[in-house]
Length: 250
Image (cartoon, rainbow, N blue to C red; front, top):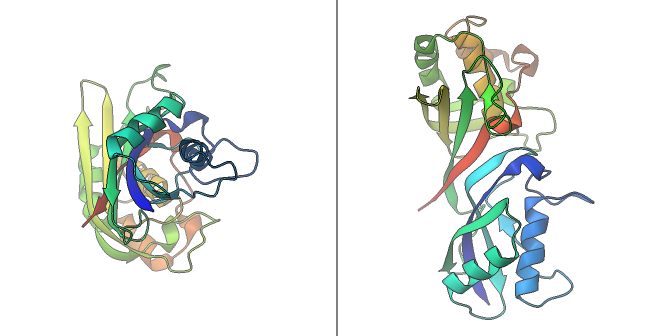
């Protein structure tokens, strides 16, 4: 058996998320069908393992998956073969052969997410599935002052949506950045951490936007850690502005 590490990108608009679901078009189901077709298996015995899940509407620039094939094909041949079977909203960017100890989920050491926000005073029809249009005034200095409060090891109980399967809400955020793109009328949030809870990035984004628009005190994140109450941070930024940008391995 040969194990392959595959870096993929996808437009999440027409996917019901990454994880396989009955009677739904998901990234995992499309990947599994293509890999088994390549291996000429008819019963779906070859499983595809992802570095994590993304929700419906969330995009990926650098999601990582792995699978084992019962024969050795050059990595470039696997990449070309997969892309010949993939729909236009999914692509294999890079394929590498790896040893059997590699696991896309359990051996990664961190992930980076990007959230794109359009600051136009109208919803751009060409960006409506790829940026969150936030037309309220934002004080970026307030956001920049709040961002360091997210960095470090914290209990993110106030930043997790119902449906989260983990009982441990402590997570470590390595870095948070704000990028300004005036030529696009956009700002981007970049979050890098060891792992993230269900909807955590989208809830953190919503809190930062509340701070920037003056609806929440600049250091209210510190209070949210203490209260451990999702009702204190009820907003979730829309899925279509979010991108899984990178997955890191040692």
